[in-house]
Image 1 (cartoon, rainbow, N blue to C red):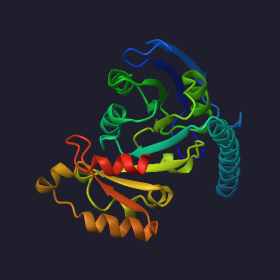
Image 2: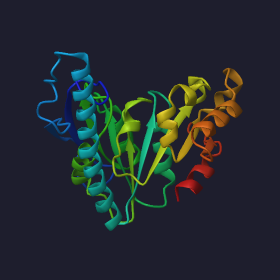
Image 3: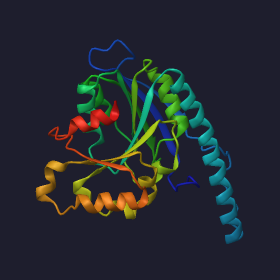
Image 4: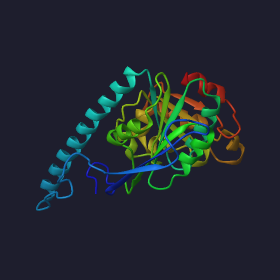
Length: 263
């Protein structure tokens, strides 16, 4: 079990899918990699005393995050040298990240590639391919987040065009993805109106990390008990000045504001 976030040992698999009509990588070669959080002994924490366990856990967490941050810095340099904008999309499952990406690909003024993070299946990467973009599906097994090493391998597979946009659709989870820098330029938290308006105070770390909060599925506001003003107020209590952008990825309502922020 990962000592940093508590997720199980990840069985990481990468599968590359080309976009419709693309001449890039093909539809389905997969690679399997061992998930290394940076310490070969991170499963063997001494447990003789509670204090000793806490001390070792803290040391391991610092080591894991330090190694990840170093790899993230290398990712960031690689992307910057090529003029590539990388965005890390984080949300709980079902908030609408993939639908948002499908509509974005259709309207994009720059080449788009996508790194898809899920514990299992190729469902979302297949949707991205059908929308017309190349994607790498990163299946994490029991892992609950993407890390910088996974993103590095995915970028190597994708080889995104210069001056393009790379979306990193993180594993659906409002906790663990907030801990891990991936080398992205900006972080976007997607929250849907069907999830309730209390999420910023329940999950403050991910909202504190956000450069933008997308409030999705606004077409359902007449049918759910959700207060956009409360969500905005609470998000800015955690992260003063953060922009909250309401839209519907399904209907296209206010989608232009998303494109304006993006470009």
